[in-house]
Image (cartoon, rainbow, N blue to C red):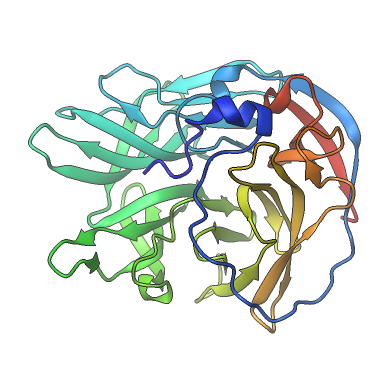
Length: 349
């Protein structure tokens, strides 16, 4: 549950990465077509953000719809904020406390902005008697939790909302302690706050039996499709909202690197902040994900001038998301480290 945490960010402040575990060996993938090489422009806006956004003991924050979304994993009492939003000026704009009567502990695994003017969160609520319930919840603009969907044996680790208000979740099934394997079920699901689950896709059986493919994963809802990237599986899932089935890509990535941050605006505009793990002087940078639809494969290719050691000025340490046509990133050579966000253009577009 803590695979994407920033709990080790004493080291990450220097290296601009998180101590995730390399969960799957790199697979040999068929070559993909070469996309036009993107180039990153100069910083045209730089804003310092509060340290609490990056050292908040939760999943890695990301940028969406004008806000940096940061979450705190565990809460043990009502009234404790576990989702915070920071605006373009770097200041806290809102905070929400997701809590449920009778709970002893609430765990938030992801959060997203809603087009209804509130905040969505996914996670689990634990009671003193040991029972646990997985959920997707909505809090309105006043911070009041007004809707909760219990998801049964499905753990919705990552959520986002499509423009039509549908909620998409990528996750995993509960563990069968008798059979010592995960329960059967689809891992990409669509929800409605009033109707509950309305559709599901991608059976868990596409992943190796012991793999927890939703750990260190990312989900993003764009104007036309939902995208999921799984680090353990080296896999991209793309599902246009009007499609009946998703496109699944096997992705190759540079040896020793993990996709720490992920930004997507469409099938040909996907970027990641990749990092090497466990090194005293980390390496990595900004990569773009090129996919070959016919081959069902993809590969991460470096964006020129952005890859190197995280102490180098030009190295991009994190790719937080898109904002009004620009990428929001952090640069390795910035004295403020990851707490300084830079707005940059990228070409070609």
